[in-house]
Amino acid sequence: MQGNALNPQFLGDAGSGRQIDVRAGGVALFHLGSSDFVVAVGSGVPTLSATKGSLYIRTDGSTSATRMYINSTGATAWVACTTAS
View (cartoon, rainbow, N blue to C red):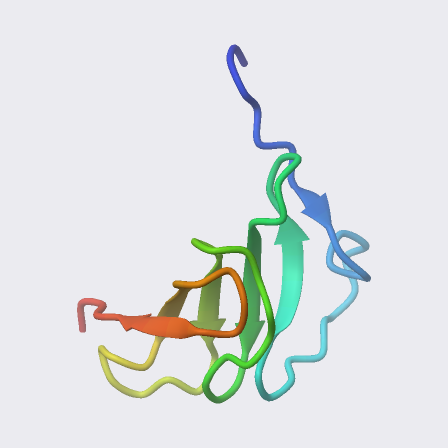
């Protein structure tokens, strides 16, 4: 691969093949590249702090407006992304 590879860095047990406990507010699964950009998963609205542009997938989201979020401030502010049905 040429250019800037993302080289994900798995956090905790995410890269070990073991099950990850999903918790309310979210848990980061991995960092991408040398930045603090994370992909996180959790139940309920996200409450974890993450780099602006990080993604959060909500396991209990039941509408097109509650399934996925993107961090908008580089702290704990998250904006819901509208997804297809």
